[in-house]
Length: 301
Image 1 (cartoon, rainbow, N blue to C red):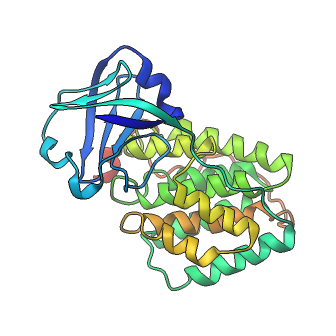
Image 2: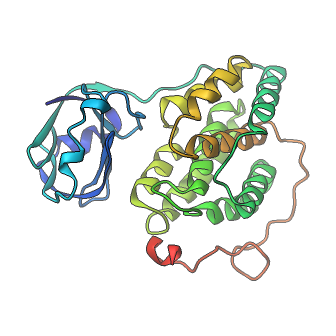
C-alpha cells in the first residue's frame, strides 16, 4: 500500500530494513520502534496525525490493523514499513504544521482568557499533584529555569495510558511556550527545557510518549494541538479549535489543552519575581519522583 510520511521519520524509513518492535496495535494506528529508538506511528487517514506518522489512504472503518494484533515480524526501512502481510511504502512526504505568528500582548491575553474560560468545565486526566507541578512549571518558566525544570521532570510519566496525562500536558506546554513567546530569550528557555525533558523521558515513560515529548521539544505536534496554539496566539476561534482537540484520546486532548494554557501564560509571564534556584534532589521538595534509571514499568508498579 502507498503511504504519506512525515519528513521527521524520513531518515528512519530510508535506511536499510531492520527488525522493529511492535508497541501497540489499535484500529486506527500501529506504533513501532526500530533498534535505534525511533518511534513511528502507522495510521489511517482519519486518525490523529502525529508528527512521526506514516499515513495510509484507508480510513479507520476499513483499517487492516486489527487483523495484525499479535504479530511481531515488523520491519522498518527500505522506504517503508512491513508487518505480516501489510507492506506500506512512503510515496509522498509532509511536514508537521506550524501556527501563524502570534499577535501582540493584548491579542494573546484575549486568547488565553478564552481558553481558560472554556477549559474550566472540561474533565482532565491530570491529578492534583500534576496540576500543581504544571502550575509551578508555568510560574517559574520565565524566571527560574531550575525550578521550572524540576516541575517538568516530575510530570514525565505521571499517569496511566500510552501517553500519560503528565506527558500530554508537558507536550502542550513545550509547544505553546516555544510558539507563542515573541522574545528570543523565550525561545532559548524553551529549547533548554525541551532538551532536558527529551533527555529525561526515555525509560521513565512509554516509548511512544517519550518520542512525542522529543518532537514537542523540537516544535512539532499534531494538527489539532498546533491549531489551538495558533488560535490562542491570534485571539480568535479558540472554542472551535479546543473542541477539535478534545476529540483526541480519552483525556489527552484536555491534558494537552491545559498544557497549552500554562505555556501561553508562561510566554507572557515576565512579571513573576525570580526565586533563588534550588538544586534538584537535595531534599528541598524539588526531588525527582523516582530515582534515576527506574523503568516506566517500575514506576507504574
